[in-house]
Length: 182
Image (tube, rainbow, N blue to C red; front, side, top):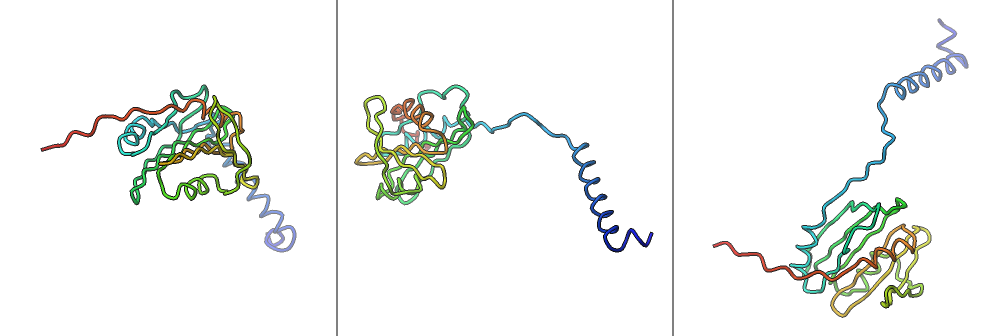
């Protein structure tokens, strides 16, 4: 027994025991081979954003085939209404729609794009979007700045998928005000 607790043989034996234990663990642990992307219903945030925002809110008119809406957050901070809507795309990349009336709009856009450097423009259904690209994060961004708010479509998705998302954007009607209790 002494030779298994000393020197090279002891080290090799301990390594073998550890690898065997890991192998047994992997064999008996259930593993799922199916993809699971959490799906969120963003309809409430869409309506609440349209109700709260002083600007014209845009939202996808439809969810693109094989895309999964996986995050939605509405924030109201310092008199700014911001809505972020995230997707796992058909190619399993990330795409996000973000819009806000944060001032200055350039700060919001730069933060969402992770860069302040414009890289060109793109025509999408007759509308000009500014392009930005941050290579080290593999992040592409489409930007539209209006007098009262900014709309950003960004993510690791390719230009084709970001363009497809931008094409689905449609103005949302203002819902009626919340009834007051009393």
